[in-house]
Amino acid sequence: MHLKNYIFNKNKLLELIDKIRRESSVSIEADKQIELGQFFTNSNIASLMASMFNEGKSKIRLLDAGAGVGSLSAAFIAEMCCREDRPKEISIVAYEKDPALLPYLFKTREVCNNACKRLGIKLNWEILNRDFINESIDLLVKSEEEDLEFQRFDCAILNPPYRKIHSNSLERKLLKGIAIETSNLYSAFVILAIRLLKSSGELVAITPRSFCNGPYFKSFRKEMLNETTFCRIHTFDSRRSTFSDDRVQQENIIFKLIKEKSQNNCNVTVSSSFTKTDEIAKYQIRYDQFVHPNDREMFIRILKNDSGYQITDQIDKLGNTIEDLGISVSTGKVVDFRSKDYLNNEPLHGTVPLIYSIHFEDGFVKWPKLNSKKPDFILQNCVTDNLLVPSGFYVLVKRFSSKEERRRVVAAIYDPGRVMFSKVGFENHVNYYHINGEGLTERLAKGLAVFLNSSLIDSYLRQFNGHTQVNATDLRNLKYPRIEQLEELGKRISTQLPEQDEIDLMISELF
Image 1 (cartoon, rainbow, N blue to C red):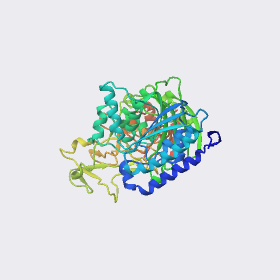
Image 2 (image 1 turned 120 degrees about the vertical axis):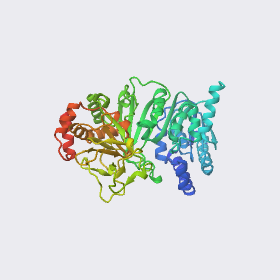
Image 3 (image 1 turned 180 degrees about the vertical axis):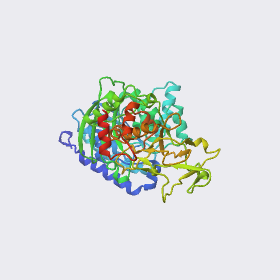
Image 4 (image 1 turned 45 degrees about the vertical axis):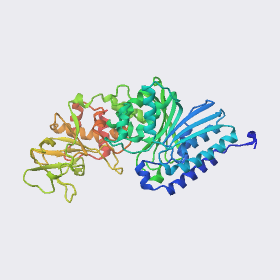
């Protein structure tokens, strides 16, 4: 067939790759997928990711780390084949550690090679049945120690494995050796891919959104933001739509970044879709709104529309950190499985209250909890005394809210008048506000609870928090009203918090 008579059919190619992916999912055990952190990319998402690349070079070198059956590389090839300025040569290095996937990956390569041949594009596709982390670390170490330059990549496309890295694992040790501190495989893959890119190289990845905030990914955010510039973020309005076939619960995002520092006067394009296929919105946000220049935690905020700007501006205008207010927020000290010898369901001599989030009701702590599976009491003695705090007014916030709850931040007031004990223990799944380890004033506690339970705070936190966990660091990173304003709110609260509409009205009056 003459090249000029060949019409490339992108959809047909992607359908063939999807068929290979489905074949692999039938033969690969689900338990093994979970163990390895494997979640395969369907053709619609792969195609969207591939469309984000700008590359217009005649020769392109692509990294696909954790290639699976090759869906992402195939989508990249399909995208490049559709463009007017098609490359003359595409070289791919695809890492896949799982030998069970190799036959499917070879099938994908064969299908893509046939398509490229018909268009006169030279395809060099190297498939490596090796561990990407070990090999790339070895490459980077040799490059630095022996001053050996290696062939870097123009592009990287990633759907990395999602799995925690244990603190005592070999992977964690190797990563620390090249100054990468992270707790999850996906962030390790992304950082290593960035280091393997050429200057101005492009990376597109789909990962959980969890790296956008929290202390565990601070080092990861720091390197990303110091070495690259974000260009694009794509979110999914449905949590389950991304990998619905794999029962994934995380909120995932696609992001594109370029390995260069050009953030000044730069915008980030935010897009979103509800299903796997329909892109429903695009929006430009300023880089200084995406990552606040003075934010020590370097939280990444994803504003989707004008209301996002308004919410951010409202919070930022408050201007007060909790340190400015003389308040602290800590995580509850009682880890129940470590203290199980001292926990009781009955009020034995020497026990004091133990508060879980199950005790939250109508904005206050209701204790004890009838018919609860959790112990209501902890024994106070020389071992547990440092886990307890003196009785007083505290504002408690759930660290983990259920997906069914309307608000990401759920706060409740611990009123010492309702629980007549001199000490109290807060369980580890609860954050608590205090002043130097002791309680707040009553009005301050009530006002602070109203503020935290507002829709404004919920919307603001969702800009950078893509999961149901609220860390103490997230709460420290908020801006707060003045003490007098919080106390004025507190004056209006009696024995229970108002309904949501009334809380939001009180906050709007505050501004």
